[in-house]
Image (spheres, rainbow, N blue to C red):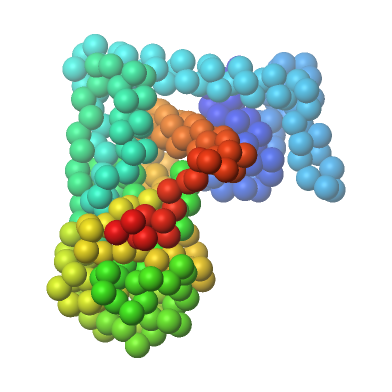
Length: 313
């Protein structure tokens, strides 16, 4: 079995759709189907059930998927170890400067464990470039937020964060439990500079054309609220300074934490980064759901919500 064919198989097994897998692999569907048929002949087993209802893994396919993940990860590790041994292994990661995210700390620790001798270079960018330099070739992979123009990029979602409006504590709306965008229609919002990705700009302005101060960094956004009463949005997981509060916006789509890299880049360090990032954020989400289940079953243990947090202030 060739590693390339195994990668084809994994793509189909994860997408459970030959068309989507072909798009993901940047190839047409007929050669992908032929490669899977050759693989089935090679292993002597049918790997997929194909029907009008869709594609599903057979028991043999499920076994091979597990083995394929292990084989491909081992092959990537071998390439990385060879590169580290000859002093040629580095990866540059772009990170959006949107304050601290505990997911980054977990990801860094997991990636160090996977590649202890690897040099990781970090390039932090401001809010004017949500791709963190990937498209410009300044970084290998970006840990950032969407939405933005994905042309020429591959993007994978890691987490979805609800968002809220950032207000001063003396704002008339600051003590609301929740808000809608219409409640803020007549306010001034912070904006990004001309030339910023339109999809990115539109999202953080609630889908409307807004008037207000131009900002480039998270701290500038918060200071615009503090000094001018400007309205902006922030993920609910971010705790603002004491003079500010965050009120959940119930009609805003969540802010997506994503990783992005250039289409067709087969650098094993990038593949490993994506794998580790996906696992780190998935494991955190599972632990969070278990904790929430425990809290809901224990009335004496209330979860610290933004409503409670704002009331304590």
